[in-house]
Image (tube, rainbow, N blue to C red; front, side):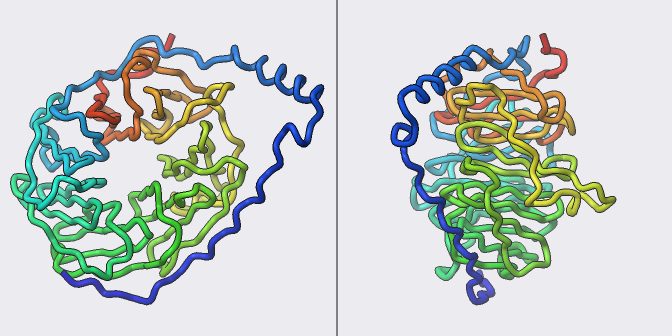
Length: 366
């Protein structure tokens, strides 16, 4: 396997904000009491409950954390990957899953991404691992990666026959058009490790830096990432692309923020400004949930997942939210929510716990 290696393109590291002095040093006791009273007065305000549950828990033959899934050209056959070299297969659309073995020298790989184009599929993981199949996953072969690869593979996207795009946790982007024998470098840099990465259908990327202090954007045709400061005191947890050309942000500690749509008649790739954001929306006034991911089922219906079995939905494009309390007692953090189409969706959690979408949220509104 050959990689064309260009000189590193380094992003400018943004200085961290100066530490704030403690509240006790800045305010007198009276002011502290007033602050506590104001804070506690909002504690009783909670998010409304969703009347019903359009999700069903699926039993997996593993307690490993699952991280990604994809289906082949057959809508009933899909694959799921996760920690400790976990590979699971379904042949009934995701109702049941069976464990499969991989021809690896260790079971310590963290398989982070899987993608299919019809029967051709790709898996990447850490430490540096790239797998390929051309028979729908019946057999997998390893493609050995160059020791010069910056970082470890983080995401893989199948594009067409023999064509795929690979991104590392340091932001290097490569593309192959010959089934993985050769890879062309599109952009490279050495900077903060990426903790979350999103790709749009037209090839744009959003990457959240490990410390959550800034994010970077990549547009096809550019030879570098463009860094952007976060626009509030909240550190970034995750980002992604909406169905209407907008972008979304999940802040650490809870809250959702959407980019402002442009008034121009530009295409979706230009319809929002990376530095023009609306105010944060707190799904619950207490704002104590750690939201981890967000996914669109329809242009107006959004689901967000988080720690402690958190699963919430908005039916009005993010303006108001409802909580799915039926999953509160599931002992898992929900790391990802994925919708392959409006009728097929999954929530991926830790310890081998996943949910499958089986209903319609509008029918569950109280």
